[in-house]
Image (cartoon, rainbow, N blue to C red):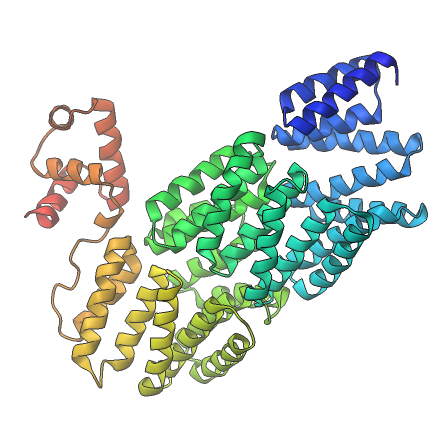
Length: 551
């Protein structure tokens, strides 16, 4: 490199170390105007990634790789290939490209005996195996990678490998063991033992795995802890992952309006091409929220175009079940089970879902057998959410086969477990099943259980489950079970006020004057009310308000 170019590249690298991405970009671009060098191309690619210009980042790194190979500089070429493998996989979800670049790096490491990089090759193989549904193999690769980190004093590699081991253990159901390693990796990364990309790697693994295992308090705490890092470094990828993960926490714990805010914010921060993996995950969770709210068509629109993505498998299957399309629902879940294996954490969710479908299809004995298989999986794991799902699934199956007494004990344990996990929707659903199980032998207790569940479901805004609970209460002779109309739980406080004034016959200008709002704001609220309640116009909304909001 020429002296001026060398100086600019040095300035860019110092800016990268300080997290000054725009300054780094300017320095590297200025260096490239003088001379195209692989160092400047690689530095620019690194800066562009932090600036959320993923496609441009990958192009710059690919050019850097080719230049390093032509020099030749196999070590830096291998480093660049490893970066490309990671970002093609993590950011774009491009499995062939990620695999190709990973294989290229592995070949260079082997051919030129680049032992310090062998651990990073193993780390990539660990991540690929784990995300591909084989955490057992992923754990083995990650443990070998960690040994290389120790051998060469590479703190970044050791911390990334530690998080990968912990994540694999969690996904295998060994939650207590796994989360301790995730905690250790996060503490080391956020404590400054590794570089910024190590924080991003450890954070992403931790948040995804904690949510899968219903370790929701832990996930929320690490999300907050990573907030300071994000404010300093401004990682768009980590911000999107954090917001999606936090939205999932809020969804699971019943804070649905906040969940929607976080998920929508995550989607707004991502382009359709730069973060397809995280984007699809956010869409899937938002669709699950819509399904719980009984808004099936909106859920379907959210999933349109991403039906074949692994992250949406459960949401798509749940949409089919809600529409009583049992065959495609079962087919999707069985296909996903073949991918993840029946000894994984995700399998518990899928197996319970499949048991519900089999009961709807009348295959009650098969459902009981599958419920006992799930119970065996729960017994061999340290994961509370697997235990809760197994107990509920077996209880549901026993009710279907005409053994309500045997079912009640399982459902009581499931209800208590979901309560401990602070999963209110799952606890309510279990409580309704328990009420069904004891309805014949203890009708008064069944009514009390169902009423309690109904009140909680209405508080959540879980319209479909609330309707089902109300229908069950009517079979027990309880009148007017719903304390509120269908859909009202979906309205915000301000929208309820607008609906009430529509019931009084007020015009938009009159509502604006009454509530001290602009006319445009009132128009938006009215449109939202009509949409959420599926009403055709103001007259129907006024009639609806008179029927349901008086008193």
